[in-house]
Length: 357
Image 1 (cartoon, rainbow, N blue to C red):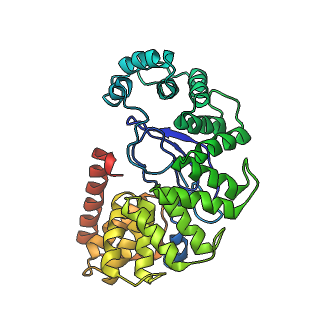
Image 2 (image 1 turned 60 degrees about the vertical axis):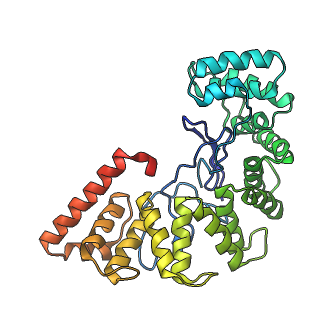
C-alpha cells in the first residue's frame, strides 16, 4: 500500500487523501469510484492480461483520493447551512462573524472556503492559517485538514512528519478518516516508523466507523496477514462491507471471491450482481470478467452480443485480452456490429450521467 497524497474535492465538500484507495472526508460527500485494477483481481491473470495503469499499488492492499463516510457537518450554525445550500459568500460572512466569537468550526469552514475557492479566489496560504487557528482551538476537522495540506504542501511547507502529527491528534479524538490515514503512514513508514500492527489497529478503527476504503484495505491486510493474523473469513467480511457501501473496486473483488468461494460460500448469483455493478461503474476488470461470464454462461445464459459488448468496453478502458478479442473477431459481422453499437450506447449514457461512475 503506497500513500499518494492528493486532495480531491467535490462541490458537496468532500476532501480526500489518496492512499491505497482512499480517502478522507472532511465535510462529507461521496467516494468517487476509481477504475483501478483490483488487488484480488490480480489473481485473475490466467484469463486476462491487464495493461491498465495501476495507479496505486499497495504493500498489502491498494489506492485513491479517497473513501466514503456519508455527510458529516462540523457545525449546525447558519454559516454551515448557507454553505450546504451553495451560498458560499453568505457562509463566509457568517463564519467570519462566528470566528470572531471564538467558534473553532467557523475557522475550519473559512479554511475550507479559501482552500477550495468556493465563491472566492482559491488561497491555500489563507486556508492553512484558518485551519491552523481552528486546530489550535480544538476543532478535529481542522486538525485533519492540516494533516492533508501538510502531506501535500498546499499553503504550507510539505512535511510528512507534521502531517502525521496532525492525523494523530485528530485520530486521538476519534476522527475516522484521520485514523485511516494515520494507519497508512504506519503501514508505509512514511512520517511514522513502519509498524504493521499499529497500522492495522488504526485502519480497523476507521473500518469499524464505516470508512469504506478502510474496510477494503483491512480486507487485504487479513488476506495477506499484514499486521494481523491471516483470516480468509475476516478478509471476505470486510470487503463485503465495503462492497455494500458501493465502492466499485470492492464490488469487483468481492464478486471474484464469491465466484471462487474464497473465505465464504460460493455464490454465483450474488457474484453476478456485484460484478455487473462494478462493470457499470467503469471497472475494466469487471467488464472483461462479464464478457467471459456471458461467453461461458456463468450466471447468465450464453450471449455472444453481450460478451462482445463488454469486451469492447473493457478494451476501450485499456484492458488487453487477446483471447477474448479473437472471440469477438470470430463473431458474424451482424452480431459484432450490434455489439459495437451497444458498447457505444453504454459509453454515451455513461458520459451523460457521470454520477453513476
